[in-house]
Amino acid sequence: MDYFVSPYNKAADLKFPNDVKIYDTTLRDGEQTPGVCLGTSEKLQIARKLDELGIHQIEAGFPVVSKQEERSVKAIVNEDLDAQILVLSRTKKEDIDKAIDCGVDGIITFMATSDLHLKHKFNMSREEILNVCMNSIEHAKDHGLFVAFSAEDATRTDIDFLKQVYKKAENCGADRVHIADTVGAISPQGMDYLVRELRSDLKAEIALHCHNDFGLAVSNCISGLLAGANAVSTTVNGIGERAGNTSLEELVMSLHLIYGVDLGFNISIFYELSQLVGKLTNMKVPENKPIVGKNVFRHESGIHVDAVIEEPLTYEPFLPEMIGHHRKIVLGKHSGCRAVKAKLDACGIDVTTEELCKIVENVKRRREEGKYINDKLFNEIVRSVRGPFDP
Image (cartoon, rainbow, N blue to C red; front, side):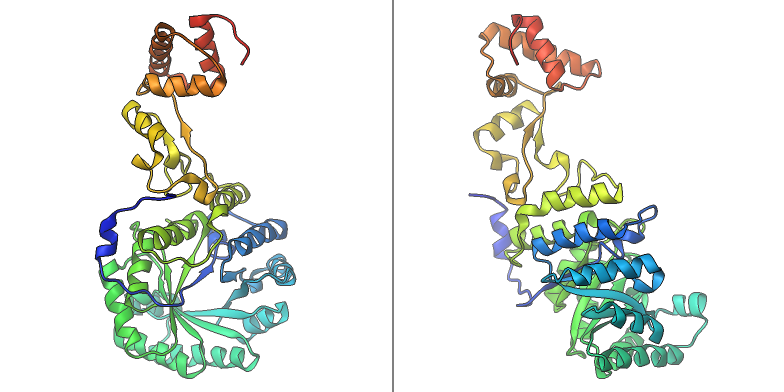
């Protein structure tokens, strides 16, 4: 058995859409993380790995931003990946023409819709916004592009106006409308309500672009899918502006293991993908990051370690090998004889019971002195107890 999650999960009568799409925006919204700047080579490496995962759509960038960004998007398009390649476009003809020139499969065009943004960002009326948005959708559709329309700050937009905007976008040919929870301000219950309200009026696909300001991005996406949304925006490691976006690996693994929704991804590369993005963005993956963090499969507490050695699923909901991760027993002040014995066995070192107890005692003491018990220090401790040996 590769995993063991709560059996009560199956007791809930839940229905997800038959065809859930994931469009990853690591290369666009993820790169908008302050301090992150990806060159063409870095973007290509991430795009290839996302395609190896089996991602449905890659939001490759925002080509109008710079010549370098345009070159990066074209390079990704030229890779001829299985994933559809999308780019972000403002509701301007020149942006869409730039996307067309890059050879992408589709665009995500956006416009803020909340009164807060209309007043302080655009100084435009609702009627003016409607006309600007729809012209861009029609222009893109005339050139055969997949078109998604995103209402920025949708979760703080008047519901009647939001319905009007999305309905007009649908009538102009938009293939999908995006609910942008721009500052992560909606609750899972609020998302359920909003999606159901919109689904009652719309035939187009509904996608969720959630930010994680309150740590609810994954929950909001799951709630939205259960309410009738069809697609979700993610980033690897959940990177992005402020608190980041919906974490790709957290969402996919939650759907797969907690809810039994297998999207067919090659999940065995998740850890490798996470490490690659962490390295190329110079954003170290937090050690306690769900799914891919270093500590998810590290164990120190003596009682826990004893059980994990006997059966890993006692303290792990799934085996690390599923995502290309690995388990590690960490020695420290909470370690017991069994953990130290396992370490000694792995090193091929035989000790007596008395020597084992002394080694355990020294491990605890050195850790309490502030020393990290790495292999070098562990070998020194063993030598001090039982004499020289070949490591």
